[in-house]
Amino acid sequence: MKSEQPLPQSLPDVVDLLNAIPHGIALLDNQLCIVAMNRILEAMTGFTAAEAVGIYADYILRTSLSSNDLICRQVLAEGGSNSREGNIINRARLRIPVHCTITRIEKDEQPTGVMVVLEDMSVLQAAKQEGLSSEGRAEIIGHSRQMEAIFEMMAVLARTDASVLITGETGTGKDKIAEQLHHSSQRVRRPFIKVNCGALPEALLESELFGHVKGAFTGALRDSAGKFRLADKGTLFLTEIGDLSLPLQVKLLSVLDDREFFPIGSSQKVKVDVRVIAATHRSLRQEVQRGRFREDLYYRLNVLHLHIPPLREREGDVRLLLEHFIRQFSRALGRNIKEISPEALRVLLDYPYPGNVRELRNIVEYGVNLCHGEQIQLDDLPRYMFKPVEPLRQEPGAEGFAQPGSSLRESAPMPPLSAWEEMERSEILNALRRSGGSKKEAARLLGWGRTTLWRKIKKYGLNKT
Image (tube, rainbow, N blue to C red; front, side, top):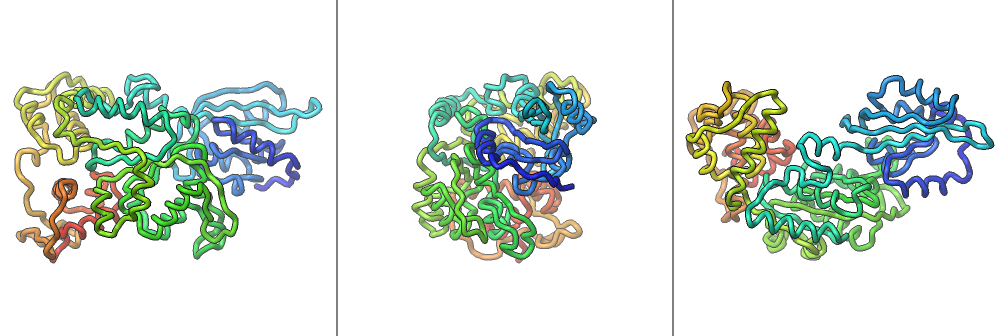
């Protein structure tokens, strides 16, 4: 449904004003069609203003709030405002908890429409679920000397707007660190947008980052804003930055230097004010030496550097995390698990955790689900913790892996691996073993896309000879 009402001539000035407000805002006309929306709401919904203007609001602001249309019409007729809490479902079908306020707009004492203000409550709700304040460290838990140094450094980094490079092995919590840096910064009221650079092919990733105009390529049926524009005045978190192709590295460097770019197929530049936080499990210095990462981009991203130590080096943190995750999953699953048996605790404290905090979390979740009493026993722990990695067996449909009874072999001589790469290879083997050879399930366990997993399988020579 498209509105036929002409747009106010002063609308650009109104939109500039709305963009200065740190909440999602939409202006609706008397027909409850969208007249304008700010960039925060673009980021929340995944729809650009160009796509949404003139569309019936319920098609863009898809909420769980009952009788949303009825309440808007009631406010339009009677005046005043109405506030409620609920959820909206964005374009990616993600649920975002919001506090919604609907207020009538008047001109010469006559109603001309309503203003809908949506405050993102996801951070506050997550903090409540963890039993923490909104200023807490979320799941960044640790009291080791290494983590205390990380927390001190984070306090410094949060006060600046410079680019940050976060390094560390897979599963160390780099995404949590990035999110906390955003929420502790002056950009906290602006969007935090995350992009996995290893999850999409180069062509799709370029469109995802920089947007495109309608008709720029086959399948471009409408304009797309891109993540840089959606993160304007906020933070863009680029995880797996080491997987970015060389052509995209050139374009990213240009954006970081000039703070402007051309969307695909457009001749008009877009200016943005975005803080970039990048993360990788790779050694970018080695990638530069191998010619796979631009040296100038490395130094541009590495203005401030934060290295997250692996869990095996964080003395005392394993026990602290075990207690935290037991409380978390016991509460979530309605269990009454109070402790870990001495035998099981010994195994958990001695295990090297190649998957770091993510793996420990999965182990505790597994144990809480299997535990039948109030104490986690040895039998409640995953079997792989008690034996070395075994040769993989092929399950039906899991092409690319060894046939039953054969050993998993590397397809070709490989150059020496760095410590990070050795750990990553070991984690992939563990995930594939746990999933019975299913790449889809292994990718889920690792938190990767299937294309990322397949690329790394080939990199480490884990595909069938």
